[in-house]
Length: 185
Image 1 (cartoon, rainbow, N blue to C red):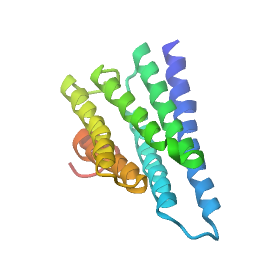
Image 2: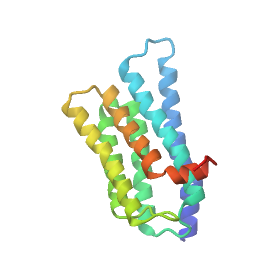
Image 3: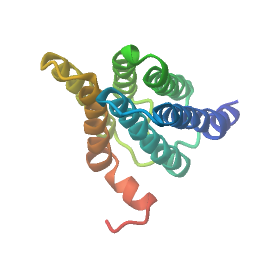
């Protein structure tokens, strides 16, 4: 049963979520043809580009380093994670007024999942899970601070995602990403 679930997530759900984000991005790009781009549209597209980048890297990383025999909590939180990604993509495309709420959901689900330790991969430790939880929590803080400073969503939303992704790449998954892409360590 677990092997079939893992295959579904690796072969269907993750690529489907990435395709949804990509579809939303190109729908926004097509809608922008012949129109002047405003900051809101640029911010929405930036959120989708960042999600596309993250999903592409994370999917490849999951295939290379993911757990061989994950438990039910892994699949539950992975499903919630994918749901949140799709929610962010669709809201950025169709309901920009809900994108902030969708990003909060995304960061909260990832923070709780890492606190619970459900995404432990080969070589991960409890410290690594806590670090990833803190990195995702920074995304929540960035959204809150940006709101308090009354930053426009066109800057606040992609900014919070960019901060989290940079921390994820350089502090959370640096060694794995270097190995994955054959970069010097």
